[in-house]
Length: 384
Ligand code: PMP
Ligand code: GLN
Image (cartoon, rainbow, N blue to C red; front, side):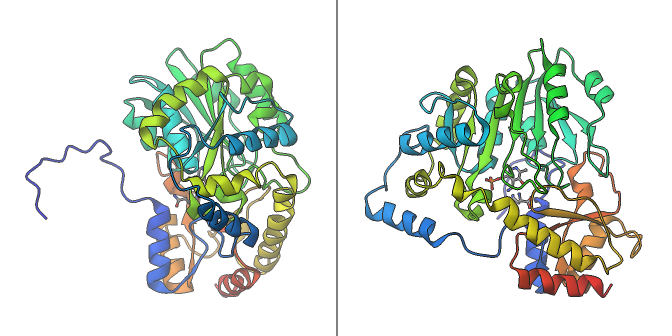
């Protein structure tokens, strides 16, 4: 349909997110979809039954704005059990429509026009547009391959009077790395005495491998005091389509978050909240997740050892980066498309996660897949 309105876009450089683009292409080509990050297996039947039971039991109208009290209490217990952190479920925890809404709402609540927001690149693609829509600007800082550690001198130089927020994502998408304790502590020291807030995107909190631990901001009081932490039940419970997550923050920060949240979504679907209330506090529902995904990582890496891809280290998340330069000198976006069409395996090109489209010849594979799916993809990738 024609519109007479002149479109002066608020996000002129933004197209359709790479996850949609690649999943659509995978489907069109009948390729094995290792691009967009989501499991191809089912959640715990008890969780699905709990949602059905909640509908039967009448959890069908608006829950409280901040989330069902039973779920917020369960989340507080989980934060205490997992990280030794005390958050008040009344005032310091809010249930969100996935991490995406949490991130957008936190940025809208904290960031003013003219502010600067530090992001580490490659950066998950939801951060930049949310920052720009507030009339603020990004200060992108490159993480350094292959371990993706921050450049501390560049960070120190980037933080100034206009810096409002640092967005921290550990475990990190798309690199499959996680910040070690010393880096978290160094960031905390660097922010001491500043007015800078931290948005800690920790959606892969339970997928840290080889016995390492997740360094949640909740473990580090100096950072927790200035941080809004974000997690997603979608990742932890294999239900990315349910879109339920949560945020935790000191009361004054959470009060600002809720001012926006109440007019953004107001609240989040009640049957899923009621179901998660029975799961979120129980360590057995997340403790084995790292082992589960570590086995899949090992299967994928062992299978691809015979390929011409070079595998970058993968210490966390459900993503594995591959360097394809021995196979092709195509730009990564073209290579990901070629791989989908010609090899029948869809992947995500990494350059889309940097403001300058920095292309290091890397693609990302998601290994949250059944072993048979991984094996089929390995066979195709080893043939290249
Ligand atoms: N942050 C990161 C780093 C992610 O990878 C994702 C992916 N799904 C999200 C946030 C969004 O999570 P949700 O699906 O709960 O909105
Ligand atoms: N977080 C998922 C990924 O990185 C995708 C989320 C989405 O499609 N928006 O693949």
